[in-house]
Image 1: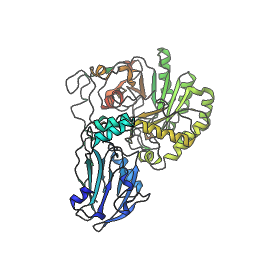
Image 2: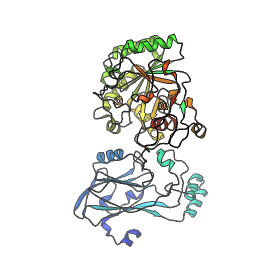
Image 3: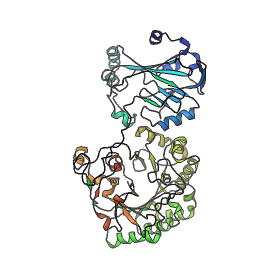
Image 4: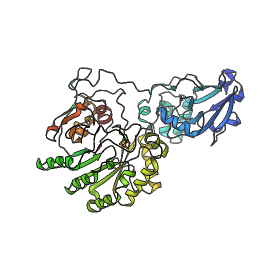
Length: 510
Ligand code: SF4
Ligand code: SF4
């Protein structure tokens, strides 16, 4: 209020907000509400919603996640408590988070944060002011220490949180990065803007990932030898009944860049495994949606009958449900040799459908329940695209599995595999030979040290082998026609190699 008075702003147009202050708004109309409040600002009406800690929205959350929350709220402006203070203005809407109460903002400073929001001079404009307050943190620290709250006491002195487990990775990484507040003006039609800006990803420099031997800095690029072919993936074709927003293989109901592979073609690779006595234990099937391929059940039967473990990736929707009888039969004959892995992009219907399209949630959840009821060995593939921490995402899936009665351990990284996001345009360091030692990682940690993927490229006379499941079209990663030809080393010459595999730690087949 002192700040507001300093500015000479009229009382009825001010909200003084901190995490608890959400319930102590200066004006009655801004009290915490479940439905948006309509308010007039210099003659322009806007819909406001004040919410408590919104677990899914963070300073680093992607714009479209925040926009989706804004749209769902039915308001123009959401004023929230949150882990760290931030404001996003996008598409004529605003999300403003005042930050944590009585806790520094993990920026290495002892200040605490609140917000002053006031009407701007122009009709329908607002000024969001993130305000950093100095206070007697030493006395507060002493009181906490006396109450044996050592971690909390330390935070007040260091300005850093004792645990960042619930923060998204980017924000946890930015621990100690100083925040410099500035007033943010919002009006309908305002340009998109985000504060703080340090979270923004840089774009990939064009000179990176060009030479298979040498990085842009002139260092020797890392390579990965095939140590032993433990998993062979068979891509059944890229057609899919869905067109997910960020499908790694760009599948749609029309994309047939990878054709349906036939059972006879797949069998040739199983024969090669047998004749060369390769140590392959697992056959994975991926698409597209594998159950659109009319040969899929036969291919599964073939692989299971040869005593391979089979991992089947599916969205568990109608294409899979057409084969209920055949799947039950396979499950009865082969039991835990068969694992069905169902893709669910988020544990909420809204964010799952934001990626996968309307009406994609219920059929998948229903398919998952059908598999569970019929005692299939089940895994789920989720994603970290919402920007939440992995711990928060696992908790969310755990609640979902309990609610729908599916027995699956969401804390098990194999039963619930969570994929980091793939963005080939975002900047990422190139992986050099020296990186293995620096990162304390081994080439044997990445998929292409133990697996390959068979694909049938459109128009090709016969299938070929790609280094891995992630680079299905890239000619530079076509490593041969036969498994024998495909057993050479792979040069890590793609952004996915760095971001997804070496730094992201993803493994499709685990
Ligand atoms: S269901 Fe899977 S294969 Fe199909 S579009 Fe979505 S992500 Fe791609
Ligand atoms: S994306 Fe990963 S698995 Fe594929 S070639 Fe690169 S490092 Fe290997």
